[in-house]
Length: 77
Image 1 (cartoon, helix red, strand yellow):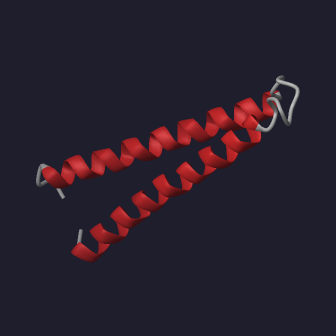
Image 2 (spheres, rainbow, N blue to C red):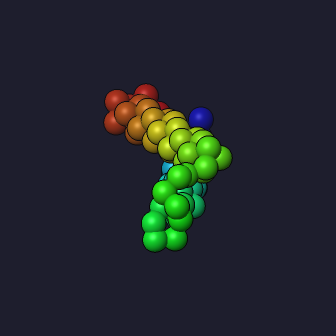
């Protein structure tokens, strides 16, 4: 892998983390709006599922990024 390819892969991994973080933020805001004072305190299954999926994607993205960083620190990249 060339240094340019490595940098592109690292950039893509960081963008994935940032995108996943934004999805968690958006899903949390939607979920939070279903609780008082704006909502009735009964979140929809869709809002809960969306939030759960966003959290899982963030966890996956962070794991992949951490793995890449560990490889870099270990000299495997």
